[in-house]
Image (cartoon, rainbow, N blue to C red; front, top):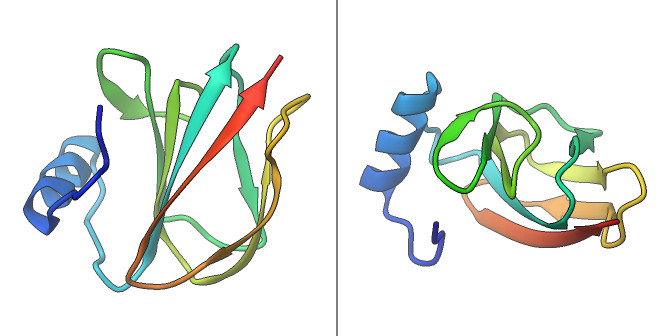
Length: 105
């Protein structure tokens, strides 16, 4: 999986596959999860959908090696996952893709 240089057409295809509608004006956050997989939370903002990549496929859910928070309202959010480092406050800008990494035990 690579998010580098994702095009709107590919994002639309992925979102459609997941049952979401891609909003180019919303924020989009991809969280890389290193270590053991576990639930990843985003609070303080609303996400239009949450999906996870299990190493093979994307599916709706919040546990995977990558977690996508789709169509997020812009603003200050808090990223959390039990026992993980790299979590905490994150500023999400509308119309932009954001990526971060957390490390779980």
